[in-house]
Amino acid sequence: MIIVLRPESTEAQIQHILERIAELGFKPHISRGELRTIIGVIGDESKLRAEPLQAIPGVEQVLQILKPYKLASREMRREDTTVEVGDPATGVKPVRIGGGSLLMIAGPCAIESAEVLETIAGQVKAAGANLLRGGAFKPRTSPYAFQGLGEKGLQILREVGHKHGMPVVTEVMDPRQVDVVHRYADMFQIGARNMQNFDLLKEVGMTRKPVLLKRGMSATVKDLLMSAEYILSEGNPNVVLCERGIKSFEDSTRNMLDLSAVPNVKGLSHLPIIVDPSHATGRPDLIPSMACAALAAGADGVHIEVHSCPEKALSDGPQALLPSQYSALLKQLRRIADLMGKTF
Ligand code: PEP
Ligand code: MN
Image (tube, rainbow, N blue to C red; front, side, top):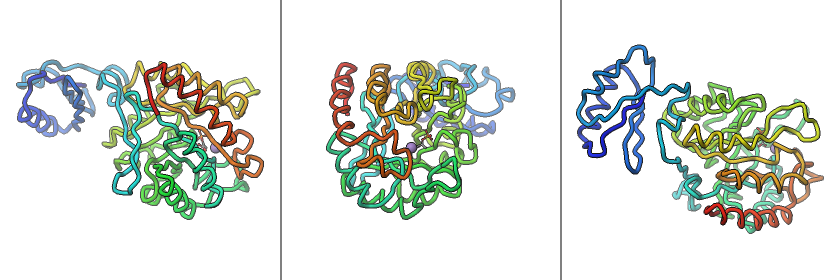
């Protein structure tokens, strides 16, 4: 349930409410909005009655959240959440997502070598990308395909990101990789195949590092929000969702981009959501129009794979945009962002 506080409630009253909730054996989650402070009470609600809470000074209303996801819901937080990616202590300026600031993620599918990543990073940064991507642990369908460079790849990503003043995001596939990825990356990526790896979600939830949570290819919007709930309920509020296409009977595209997921999620949740037209379509000829449509639908950014020589790429080469194509696309996206009152 959620406890809506009166606008004039004092800090002492808030602390008192938090203590009462903890005494009752529940985990309080506080959300301080511009106008109101809301406290989410998470746990078995059959063991909690609204009336005693309603009687505490400073409480305006106690409401049941009917949706199965609680902390991720719009009821919990009316304002859009913004997430900051990057640590100023590393010397790289953090990037903000949400509240009108767009996240432009670009880079190769996999980190292949320092030289290749260096070339791509320089080009996407010049085009306007603000977060560098690259996989060091790759979820490949075949065990014989390139699996990624592991920690060596993470080192390369960190160094190249640093050199170009870009925070970095990379995939973590297993709870055992969380520590090492935490050391090098500014944002965890949970891939589509791991969206319901609940142990992994809990592990990244125990950190405070931002998480890019990609929708599973057979997951509903509700499933996606339930997975976000796992991360939030561990105490990490920094979740960014990503629509990357779902399975369908259509086989001319890699997946089916569910663009309606963007406004759908925005109605149901306060979390930012971006779109990955690269994995959704698998086709460079379709990526630009789908990226434009994503921003027009209200997405908080796009995630696009770019390679300086797609034919030599070790994974997902056929769907990579060339840096020149990415640069042309970003010019178009700037105009759409302008119309939407957003910037990157
Ligand atoms: C990726 O971003 O490289 C990736 C594997 O994406 P997804 O998990 O969406 O398939
Ligand atoms: Mn890929």
